[in-house]
Image (cartoon, rainbow, N blue to C red; front, side, top):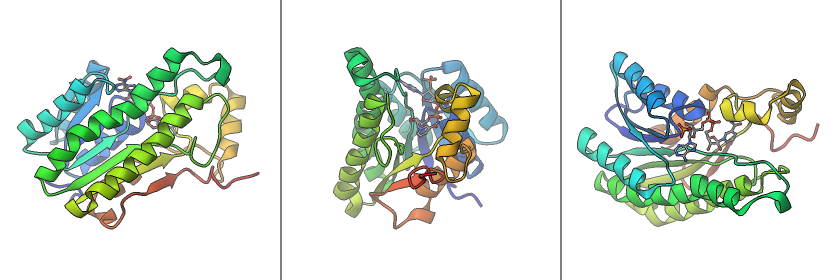
Length: 254
Ligand code: NAP
């Protein structure tokens, strides 16, 4: 029996990396999925793979910074699958990595829109749908950057991801008594296109691996398993938390 049998989940950033792996894992556990990202072809390929394996998945292509896309995802969950139980609001971008005085306002706004305002648009649409089901689980992908570690060159990214934790805490407090749990998932360095872009030389990769107590990056599946925990009844008393799944990067000084 799957942990998510009979549940419907929205997953953003499903075209790649952590989101894609989480979609495959949630489908293995019986969830019906609404897959969101900008790259339509990647989403369709993933949806087809899930359907070929006997699952159910629908793609909604567009930017998470667009409130219309957030609304469309909830509409699809409601009309095609009968309601919404889980949302993994995971899409994200690092933006340009430059010292703050060199950061353009355009870059700042793009990162905040993609990583933080997107979560506002998403939650605004998702909360009423979850309430209609008597509750559910909201998960926001944050990061250790801006929470336990200040990483040079990542001002917009850190600010947007720290903002997600504040947003999540308010949702958890506002809607706990009505059955909605809200949590943030804070991965460490993870072997995805984003992770590889940050560690783009052998020296940079060795440096980033060395920052972690486990001396390696996470596999996307390891982060997906934590998303499954937060999505499922296994975490029924967990809400308002910033869950570090960071290989010890936050406590390592060697
Ligand atoms: P990834 O493989 O590059 O995936 C990023 C995903 O976000 C893609 O599916 C991308 O899809 C989507 N996305 C980006 N901008 C979007 C937009 N405007 N609208 C819709 N979708 C958008 O990176 P990842 O490592 O899996 O990242 C997933 C999340 O984990 C991010 O929030 C990231 O900040 C966080 N994280 C990653 C690491 C790491 O080391 N990799 C560590 C901590 C936290 P499209 O390009 O198709 O739109």
